[in-house]
Image (cartoon, rainbow, N blue to C red; front, top):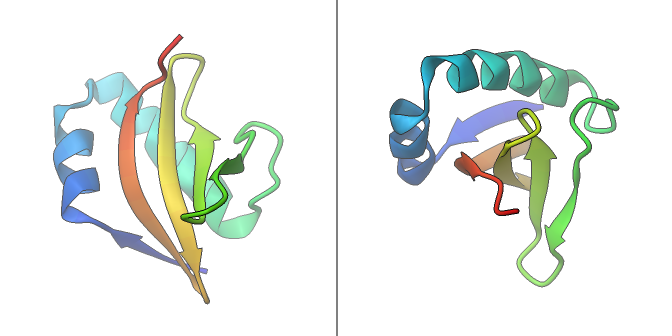
Length: 81
């Protein structure tokens, strides 16, 4: 699988704390190799629009779609509790 970053994702990533950026970088490597890796806890977030959610850490999530052989990263943000 390949990765594609939206402009929205890039802006959110740049605003995220450095520790979150580092954690995301580790998790996105897992995503590319195994969508079902336990630490990602990836799940469908919005079935109608085909949006998935995966975990960065306990307080942050990233959102993406799957388009043929590409994960299109949409956003990264604090998880609303």
